Length: 331
Image (tube, rainbow, N blue to C red; front, top):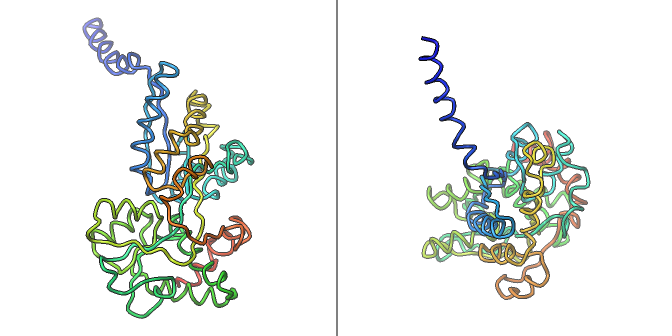
């Protein structure tokens, strides 16, 4: 009777594990922000092909997407990402600050502060621009409804908030005028989605709002898919949104994926990776590729977080920490 019980059990056991042993692929998890889904479909396929040709090793890349700050907290709290790709440096910094998953100087390990691409905040409006929205000042007018993701959970939302604030400062206004302007803007925001893709759904599919504030790459993808329904408006000035990436050292070491994870993040800076970024309306950071495609992206007066806000650490503490300026405004 023991043998009759043991043999089926062994077969059941081997049935669970043999497929894993027969497919010894390396698997990476890239935890990313909300509006990179389409980019990574193409990028990952290209890297998988490149890695197979270079090493003979098959690699599977899994993706996780959501509001960037929410995603970053998940990794800091134990989501075992091999790679993290965000739209702002603070959402990678917390991996060191909260959990020591990466070194403090992670930005020094890759070119351009580890940011392979950048973007900016622009407006998506209904076809024909019925509310005649041309610049930031038009967004605070009575009767104009603006869709922005939540700055507390979304890097997309943070950039929209800081872009509006910085617009006032760049025009010569002071902090009080900037706060008043942003307060009026958020009074015109009917709903705060947790991430950029949720905000896109609210605007494009639920038909809420007269303007969507989101990244340049996102609005161009929407217009490419649904061009007859929307127009893109470039404001007179906006913020430089940098998109950093890093290996998550502690988890990559645990998974024994350090080599492939490092190659994966470096591939973002290759000509092939930069070309894919351009195809998805992300501005390349490698000078040779940026020069090649300079006519693809509309010139715009861009200001950085460092320039206007004294860096991300100061901006985060002042504007987005609990009880900070955003909390005061939104209450």
